[in-house]
Length: 161
Image (cartoon, rainbow, N blue to C red; front, side, top):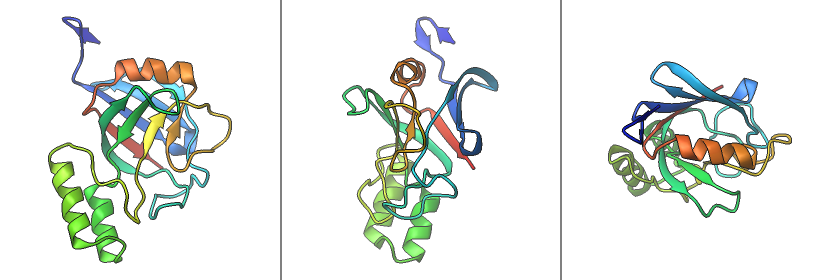
Protein backbone atom coordinates (compact mmCIF):
# COMPACT_ATOMS: atom_id res chain seq x y z
CA UNK A 1 0.00 0.00 0.00
CA UNK A 2 2.83 2.42 0.75
CA UNK A 3 5.62 2.83 -1.73
CA UNK A 4 8.71 4.59 -0.38
CA UNK A 5 6.63 5.83 2.56
CA UNK A 6 3.90 7.26 0.30
CA UNK A 7 0.40 6.03 -0.35
CA UNK A 8 -0.17 4.27 -3.65
CA UNK A 9 -1.78 6.42 -6.33
CA UNK A 10 -4.05 3.45 -7.20
CA UNK A 11 -6.29 3.93 -4.15
CA UNK A 12 -9.99 4.28 -4.94
CA UNK A 13 -13.25 4.08 -3.01
CA UNK A 14 -16.39 2.19 -3.95
CA UNK A 15 -19.61 2.80 -2.02
CA UNK A 16 -22.59 0.48 -2.50
CA UNK A 17 -25.61 2.32 -1.14
CA UNK A 18 -27.92 -0.72 -0.96
CA UNK A 19 -25.54 -2.58 1.37
CA UNK A 20 -24.28 0.58 3.17
CA UNK A 21 -20.69 -0.54 2.52
CA UNK A 22 -17.62 1.49 1.58
CA UNK A 23 -14.63 -0.46 0.24
CA UNK A 24 -11.16 0.94 -0.30
CA UNK A 25 -9.29 -0.65 -3.20
CA UNK A 26 -5.65 -0.56 -4.18
CA UNK A 27 -5.92 -1.28 -7.89
CA UNK A 28 -8.38 -4.18 -8.09
CA UNK A 29 -7.64 -5.46 -4.57
CA UNK A 30 -9.99 -4.57 -1.71
CA UNK A 31 -7.92 -3.52 1.30
CA UNK A 32 -10.52 -2.24 3.79
CA UNK A 33 -14.31 -2.21 4.16
CA UNK A 34 -16.45 0.02 6.37
CA UNK A 35 -20.16 0.18 7.14
CA UNK A 36 -21.66 3.63 6.39
CA UNK A 37 -24.76 5.74 6.86
CA UNK A 38 -26.24 7.73 3.98
CA UNK A 39 -28.58 10.63 3.39
CA UNK A 40 -31.96 10.55 5.13
CA UNK A 41 -33.69 9.59 1.83
CA UNK A 42 -31.09 7.14 0.52
CA UNK A 43 -32.90 5.45 -2.38
CA UNK A 44 -32.22 6.97 -5.80
CA UNK A 45 -29.79 9.53 -7.13
CA UNK A 46 -29.43 13.09 -5.82
CA UNK A 47 -31.31 15.61 -7.98
CA UNK A 48 -31.79 18.80 -6.00
CA UNK A 49 -30.54 20.51 -2.87
CA UNK A 50 -32.36 19.30 0.23
CA UNK A 51 -33.65 16.00 -1.18
CA UNK A 52 -31.65 13.98 1.39
CA UNK A 53 -30.24 11.67 -1.27
CA UNK A 54 -26.65 10.52 -1.54
CA UNK A 55 -25.51 11.02 -5.15
CA UNK A 56 -24.65 8.13 -7.45
CA UNK A 57 -21.91 8.10 -10.07
CA UNK A 58 -18.17 8.53 -10.39
CA UNK A 59 -16.51 11.34 -8.47
CA UNK A 60 -13.11 12.15 -6.92
CA UNK A 61 -11.85 13.44 -3.58
CA UNK A 62 -11.30 17.17 -4.13
CA UNK A 63 -10.15 17.94 -0.57
CA UNK A 64 -9.19 16.43 2.74
CA UNK A 65 -10.63 18.50 5.60
CA UNK A 66 -8.93 18.00 9.00
CA UNK A 67 -11.26 20.54 10.65
CA UNK A 68 -14.67 19.05 9.77
CA UNK A 69 -17.51 19.49 12.25
CA UNK A 70 -17.95 15.73 11.74
CA UNK A 71 -14.41 14.86 12.94
CA UNK A 72 -12.57 14.54 9.57
CA UNK A 73 -13.91 14.62 6.03
CA UNK A 74 -13.15 13.93 2.39
CA UNK A 75 -14.86 16.26 -0.11
CA UNK A 76 -16.57 14.49 -3.03
CA UNK A 77 -16.74 16.20 -6.44
CA UNK A 78 -20.52 16.43 -6.65
CA UNK A 79 -22.04 17.79 -8.88
CA UNK A 80 -20.41 15.90 -11.74
CA UNK A 81 -20.57 16.94 -15.39
CA UNK A 82 -23.53 14.55 -15.86
CA UNK A 83 -25.33 16.13 -12.88
CA UNK A 84 -24.59 19.61 -14.25
CA UNK A 85 -25.89 18.68 -17.72
CA UNK A 86 -29.12 17.35 -16.20
CA UNK A 87 -29.41 20.49 -14.09
CA UNK A 88 -28.84 22.77 -17.07
CA UNK A 89 -31.43 20.93 -19.16
CA UNK A 90 -33.96 21.15 -16.30
CA UNK A 91 -33.21 24.88 -15.77
CA UNK A 92 -31.95 24.15 -12.24
CA UNK A 93 -28.60 25.81 -12.95
CA UNK A 94 -27.47 28.57 -15.27
CA UNK A 95 -25.08 28.28 -18.20
CA UNK A 96 -22.44 30.06 -16.08
CA UNK A 97 -22.89 27.54 -13.25
CA UNK A 98 -22.68 24.67 -15.76
CA UNK A 99 -19.45 26.06 -17.22
CA UNK A 100 -17.96 26.58 -13.75
CA UNK A 101 -18.74 22.98 -12.76
CA UNK A 102 -17.37 21.50 -16.00
CA UNK A 103 -14.20 23.63 -15.80
CA UNK A 104 -13.60 22.53 -12.19
CA UNK A 105 -14.15 18.86 -13.01
CA UNK A 106 -11.74 19.16 -15.95
CA UNK A 107 -9.13 20.55 -13.56
CA UNK A 108 -9.93 17.98 -10.81
CA UNK A 109 -10.71 20.94 -8.56
CA UNK A 110 -13.62 21.72 -6.21
CA UNK A 111 -16.80 22.06 -8.26
CA UNK A 112 -19.33 24.79 -7.50
CA UNK A 113 -21.04 23.75 -4.25
CA UNK A 114 -23.94 26.15 -3.77
CA UNK A 115 -26.43 25.45 -6.55
CA UNK A 116 -29.98 24.11 -6.77
CA UNK A 117 -28.41 20.69 -7.50
CA UNK A 118 -27.01 20.63 -3.97
CA UNK A 119 -23.40 20.21 -3.01
CA UNK A 120 -21.06 19.87 -0.06
CA UNK A 121 -21.13 16.08 -0.25
CA UNK A 122 -18.49 14.59 2.02
CA UNK A 123 -17.40 11.30 3.48
CA UNK A 124 -17.15 12.15 7.19
CA UNK A 125 -17.41 10.91 10.74
CA UNK A 126 -20.34 11.27 13.10
CA UNK A 127 -21.58 7.70 13.30
CA UNK A 128 -23.62 5.15 11.42
CA UNK A 129 -26.79 4.95 13.50
CA UNK A 130 -29.41 5.09 10.74
CA UNK A 131 -29.36 7.19 7.57
CA UNK A 132 -29.09 10.71 8.98
CA UNK A 133 -27.00 12.94 6.73
CA UNK A 134 -28.23 15.49 4.19
CA UNK A 135 -26.65 13.37 1.43
CA UNK A 136 -23.16 12.67 2.73
CA UNK A 137 -21.62 9.32 3.61
CA UNK A 138 -20.93 8.92 7.33
CA UNK A 139 -18.62 6.56 9.19
CA UNK A 140 -17.73 6.06 12.84
CA UNK A 141 -15.16 8.65 13.95
CA UNK A 142 -12.46 6.01 14.48
CA UNK A 143 -13.08 4.65 10.97
CA UNK A 144 -12.95 8.05 9.22
CA UNK A 145 -9.55 8.50 10.86
CA UNK A 146 -8.35 5.30 9.21
CA UNK A 147 -9.95 6.13 5.86
CA UNK A 148 -8.57 9.68 5.95
CA UNK A 149 -5.07 8.24 6.31
CA UNK A 150 -5.54 5.79 3.43
CA UNK A 151 -7.12 8.00 0.78
CA UNK A 152 -5.23 10.74 -1.07
CA UNK A 153 -6.83 13.81 -2.62
CA UNK A 154 -7.71 12.98 -6.23
CA UNK A 155 -8.76 9.39 -5.44
CA UNK A 156 -11.73 8.11 -7.46
CA UNK A 157 -15.01 7.60 -5.56
CA UNK A 158 -17.63 5.42 -7.23
CA UNK A 159 -21.07 5.53 -5.61
CA UNK A 160 -23.38 2.73 -6.74
CA UNK A 161 -27.11 2.22 -6.04
